[in-house]
Image 1 (cartoon, rainbow, N blue to C red):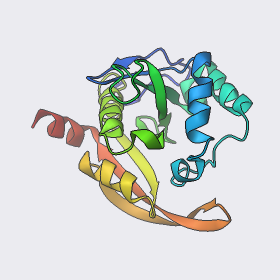
Image 2: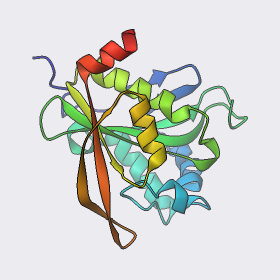
Image 3: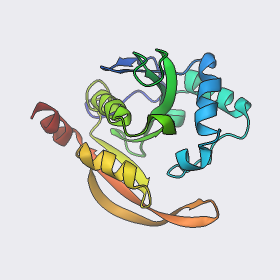
Image 4: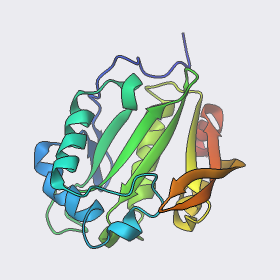
Amino acid sequence: MTGTGPDRAALNTYRIETERLVIEVPSDSDAAALFSLVGGDDRHEVTAGLIWDGPDEISETIGFIHEAQTERYGESGFHWAIRDRTGFTTGSSGMAIGMISARPGVQPGRGDVGYWLGKPYWGKGIMREALTAVLDLCFGEFDQVKVEAEIFTTNSRSMALVEGLGMQLEGTIRSSHLKRGEWVDAHLYGILRDEWKALRSS
């Protein structure tokens, strides 16, 4: 059957290489770098567009890494570390600089994406490169029909990212999430498999 997406019992064994990045399941050795980026001095800005407010202790990051290594797709999706493959931003090749996820939707063949990137690496096209690669995987090997992204209406950077990749605004969810004591609205973006393939072949 086509268009059903990954087997919900599957483990994440996928590794993607792009021109500048490696996108792969995080390892225990990534904990310190990831914690410093999402739980350190830039925590407030990095997590402003996330449902989650970031880890308080490195043990939380270690726990998330272990979940990414062992959980099935149907439990919480697939989660990858984004690595600086060549050292073009960090000076040290292979360093984890953010995370990206592909998660199952309620209906087979539909899913959504989520992501964050350490603030020192913003504005370099990194997340565009990473998200393009993950969408290629979703619509290619996963054979999904549609991929969505839910983005806070205050997150202009993320909206510009997905719009630049061809995602369409499909609606606004009012009071979508309680974030830092305030209810925030979220835009729902989506792109269909045929639309993505047409964009990639143009």
